[in-house]
Amino acid sequence: MYNTILTLLLIVSVLIVIAVLMQPSKQQDALSALSGGAQDLFGKQKARGFEAFMQKVTIVLGVLFFAFALALAYVSSH
Image (cartoon, rainbow, N blue to C red):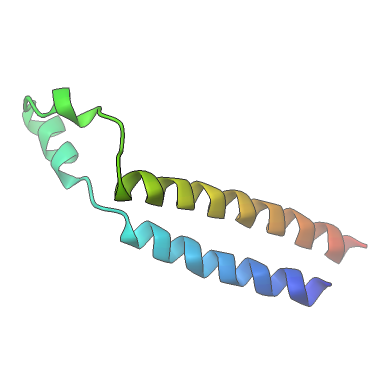
């Protein structure tokens, strides 16, 4: 049981790294924060399409990561 949970935790960890790297960068937001650009008006829009999908995938993988980490801690303590 311990080895199975550990393997799943490692797989989810790699998938989280891949999902975060695949998300589009938001460097334009950082530039407009420094320069006070008018793009802040449109920067607060809801994510759509690929961005929304990747955000949901990252959230699900994060929840799975913590669930597997807690399960691994429980199994290893007993």
